[in-house]
Image 1 (cartoon, rainbow, N blue to C red):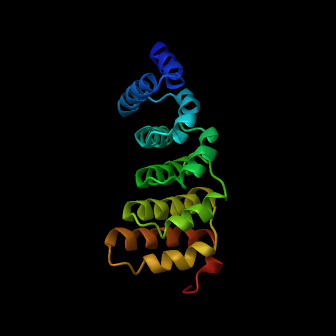
Image 2 (cartoon, rainbow, N blue to C red):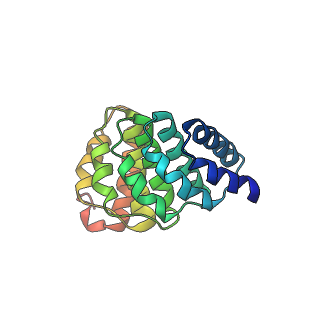
Length: 186
């Protein structure tokens, strides 16, 4: 696998967009096979800002997959935080997911909280759901939480969508476990 990963790392940085796109597809195939190599993280970072939306989608997914496999890297944190502002729903959703997975590795930042709070009002229900989950994970795994999330999550807990209401309840529970004094119902 080392030769293949080394080749992928080189090709992910190739100036030819066709070579980069092909390398990204092959990287995703490697990650789906659970052949996770943390050294792939850094070559993926510039692709999070690529002009091609498909490249950004795949790069953020790949970073999330590495984090899910406990092979994520703190170097991806800044790129993922910026990607929460991407114009594309799937890029925002993937980035929130990746941040939640990084939290399981002990990687996170307080600056994620206001960005994730903003996504709780996103037009995409999938983005809202993933931002909710990421807020819960940051609270659960790192103790990172902000009181400003509570009102937003309480409103989502009343949403008719079970997906959103249950997710909001779960995130609130994680926040209250870390900051019981914020729970007015306690």
